[in-house]
Image 1 (tube, rainbow, N blue to C red):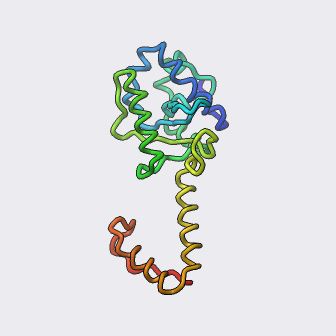
Image 2 (cartoon, rainbow, N blue to C red):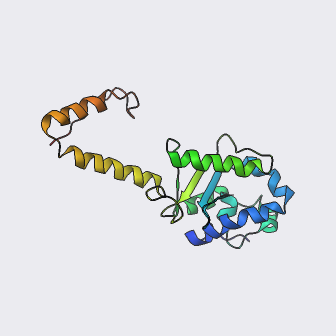
Length: 184
């Protein structure tokens, strides 16, 4: 019976272990394109490693166990647990472009490509990722907080100029929303 991981370290070890298990199993290789939730990390040499949720999320898993239990394994349960330790990478970030290219290269070694619905998750506070990149959502929140703090130090004329630039940005997350109000 499969047991879900209880720590980020267990999931990390599974991710590092996945490729060696994959090399010895043509049946596992044939399933690669079906995985939607990929969990990635860098090993100590800086190379990207990946595993699908159904592998990363179970304790003491290997290729044989994965194949024997594949039908009974529940990716939703593993993803719910893994979300305690991992964050999805924002597709608009350089980290996503880098990880996505690495995932394509990894799967290409087995003649596969990721599912069109694939998403990549990375461990929060992963020491092997660049500073500020290990928790993409938190890193963006920190940038916004910094921008707001800096905006509060601007003289009124520069603040109004900044507001004008921000409100005419075509990439606004909420099109049609009125002017942004910042107070000095």
